[in-house]
Length: 490
Image 1 (cartoon, rainbow, N blue to C red):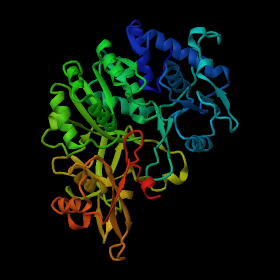
Image 2: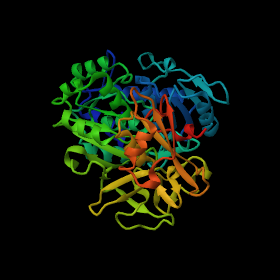
Image 3: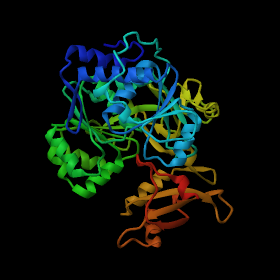
């Protein structure tokens, strides 16, 4: 059985297998993989990667398909010091081509990308049940905790996607921080409907495997009946979701999910903002469930957490630092701390903060000394709670005053508009520099624009009220629910 001192996640997986090899670790369809089988299959996958000539430091482009082979290959690469470039197999071709050019992998696994000097391998080639690669490797290469384990690419909602280099120590630190807050344990059975190509879903896999729980791989949340069946049949105790998934569940099933309220021990929500009315609804439906809302980025996974029932009087906040290993502060444009209550850039330091971006140019303004610059604008109150007002690049400079699109959007949605997004446009009068424009999602029996303006006059400051409005069929969002404002500016 392998030893992996460079990765606390892998060390826990191996240690748990020694302690109780017959406990189920993974479920996919009718397949149930024990801890002992998981370790054996990781070793077999490692033998396969070695057999095709891969060595420490090589990069592989790994398709994040919700299959057991992905899990084995993902951890096997980390065991060998091979760098995983995890990608969404449904990504647009131009994104895949960009990632391929930028990372120059030695092999592509699970995708047919025929351009470039790399080897294409399908998951069917990695059949752990019919391995012909001989005995598992018992002399594992030396890998350092600070070596890059994964390269994850951002969604690129405010610019070109950035390659985020995460070390083994980053991944283990993040998982330890999250488990410490949520309290994951061996008895947990989690349903994973999130994509494995994003930090949230992949992080949940690492957390449950490190804690010794059972992870049930679910295709996605599209078939709610099937998802609810899995919750019931597998006695699921927790799952993670993005706000867009909650909107989907709420719209298609109403409050029926509440029948699992006494069964679910925790629900983690993140990747985008959850409206306060939805936080209150979740608290009502799940009075005894830990409702954990996180703030984080691919570059700094889960920097802040808020537990709704414990923070019921402060639902506007995005929480406090997740552990003693994480520091968060608000800095001005010169990298200096600002007083509590003053807006500035939210900056993070901790064991889960990335090593660097892949491309040197992306690192130019990424840090203030030891502080990673998130690009998010907000403030901290006197009790240490943090609040967001928007992305720094998305703030609208109205006559020298910074206006947050998120503030305007929340006010408009409170009027009954199902969804909206605000961007900066040049002031038509040429006086204020920039002014807000609101894109509104069409709906039945809508308010008129004049009625919306009249209501907003009581909800917003005068410089926050949009100057222009446009009805659209849908607000463009990423798969994690983030507004893609660049598409509205085209």
